Each structure stands twice: as C-alpha cells, then as structure tokens.
Image (cartoon, rainbow, N blue to C red; front, side, top):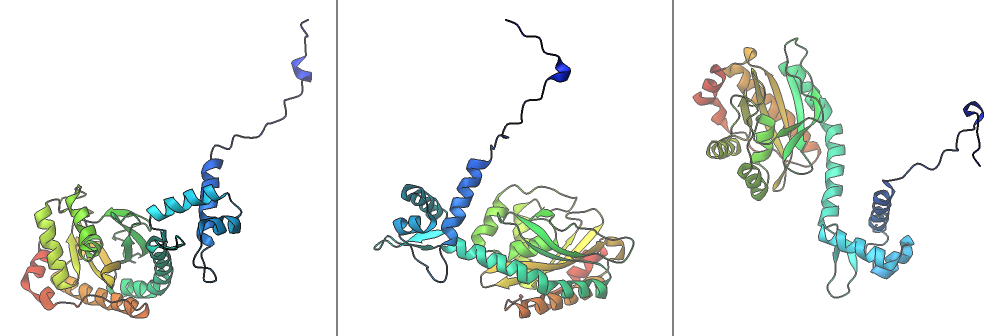
Length: 293
C-alpha cells in the first residue's frame, strides 16, 4: 500500500554522525606522540613490550611505530639490548624549537634598534624546516613611506637575496650543494641563477662575513645580512633591506657594521657566534655595487 504524507507535517530525519575521514590519521598521530612522550628524564630507555604496556597499546602497534620512528631517526635501538632511546632527529627537533623560541624573544629588541638606527626595514630570517628556503621570523618595518615590506612567515628560495644567501653560505656543505644543484628560479632581474656565479658569491660572503644583494628578490630593493652560527650550522640571519633610491656606498658600509653588531648582540646572549667581519667591505668593489643601483 502506498501511503501519502503531507510534506508540511513530516518530521526531518535525525542527523546522523558526520563522517570522520580524518580520524584514522589522527589516531596514528596520537599514538605516535604517546610513544615519543614516554621517553623522558625519568625513563630514557624502553623495550617494545614494556612501552606498549605503559602507553596502553598493542605490542604489534607499538613495534610498527618504533620501526617507523627509527627509520626517521626519532628513536635509535641498541643492537645488543634491543631497547629504544630518542634519536638524533628528536634531539634536533627539540633544539630547533628551543632555539626559535629563545631566538625570537632575544632578537626582537636588537632588530628593532637596528631598524631605528638605519631607518630601514630590519629582518630576522631562519631556514625552513625542509632546509630549502628561508622563512621570515621577525620584521620591523622602516618608518619611512617608501620601504620594503616582508611578511613574517614568508618563504624565499635560499639563492636569492642577502638574508637567504647569508644562510646558504654557512649551511653544512652537503645541504648547501643540494640547494645550489637544484633549480635556481629567477625572482628578479639580478637573481643569481648561474651556479658558477652563485658559488663565487657564496665564497665571497664567507670571506666577508656578510651578504649583500641588489634587485635579487624585488625590483629597486637592496639588502645586507649577517648570519648567526652554531658550530658547523647556521641558526638565522639578521638583515636590513630598503629601496635603492636611498642606497650609496656609505649606506652599505654603515648597514654592514650596524647589522653585524646587532647579530653579535643576539649571538652573545644565546651562546652562538657570528663570522668575523672582514674589512673587504671597505674596498672599492662594494662601493661600485652600491653606485650601480
């Protein structure tokens, strides 16, 4: 029998549970972090079975997670005891998080002072997590109407611009070569896309202790940057940037000195270091770079 129902009197069906398509992925993440968080100062080593009991997960599940984490370097396994400890990737991740948190707090006032001294935009730039680009960590804009504006969080390829090249020049050689050997996109008219010229510029940056750029990322923009170093790696770069209409040899020399001083102040507070500033920047070729703007 067919039943006729007045649509105006029909009650809507109760809503069913929304599909949770992301739940399996979330569950894997929750379990992975539960395993990692079990390693702490009170218990730095675990066997797979006892770790499974501690996090209330099946032993095969914990074993699969540990194998994946071992492959990525987040845990290591003793060959004799078969017990697990946190690996170098976990240590590096913690160090990076601590360095960035401390770095931004310590660096903000010197970066502000640098911007006030020079009247230009001052930047604190780090290396992106995948080590293929720079990321703007902090920016203090110039008070002048004509200025270079860089948004915090902006990513820029490591071969283009003063801050980026300061990072690239002092990265571990293997990582730097991976960047140089890859595709060098042209962002602006003076971007270094020739690998030979880029390597020569990076050598010059290492000798000078600072980097310069002119119209490598933006038309009519120049920049100066000094890296902050930790051992054999680069932590960040402190830089200034502005329009080329205000550029001269004297401006570049003063910017180099002030930027190096700001970077040294930040490095000292965090037990890092800056490269020695070479007096090469007093030579004629840098004045010619500025005069060509």
